[in-house]
Image (cartoon, rainbow, N blue to C red):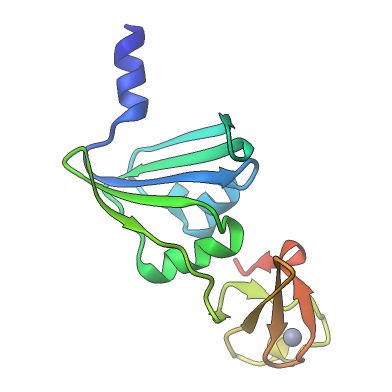
Length: 154
Ligand SMILES: [Zn+2]
């Protein structure tokens, strides 16, 4: 019985496996891509042991594939994550994560005086990496914020 359960967790026929997510980011990523709203079976591993990260999160979602744009967004949260697209139990494609130059419509500007709040415009940030730290610069108010303080528009 133990073996069967393991198999269910470890192998998916078709879908996406996102591995090497920093611990505690898994649920955030799930929500970011609205995966939890999908009807597909999702298997998550939280705080799994990882030789590279100490602990990591892992998401397996069946019958769903990330677009390149989604993979780039993922890079904002988990730059070192690996994304494997599975077809018939085999890795059909490995997506390379690249930070997007611009990110639109995902985060709200933390500056409450920013014009983007009052206008019917999509939020828009330029992605800046300084000494390995990801920062976002608002197109409208031109203020710079660290990725950690950003909240998603929902
Ligand atoms: Zn702004």
